[in-house]
Length: 142
View 1 (spheres, one colour):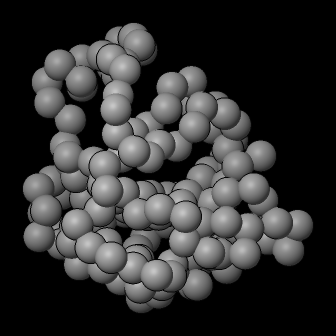
View 2 (cartoon, one colour; view 1 turned 180 degrees about the vertical axis):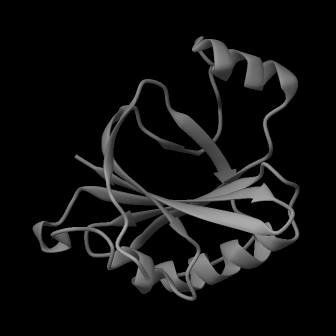
């Protein structure tokens, strides 16, 4: 896998997620189940795995594709309506990498520079971009 270049992302609003429709006790199992789930999901669906600095699974959440109203709010940079979902990516500053989905979670985690410093939280977002492609994003809390 080619080394990805990182960017800095400043998230102004939370990204909410509902509970994933599967149970997983560890990050690798959650990753495999999330990729499988998204394979048959609607285009625009996404999943998120929150991991601790020791790569323990904190949550596995999903989000349905955005509707026209939500898309319009995002495009205009307007505030999102409050959510009651159990999980979220909190507003803040993140190191951001976009990658191709790999066979396993560890291959993607290996792309994070200096992981030994132990970032607070790592988010693995998996987004179904089209009927044949899922892309992965790593968001590392700064």
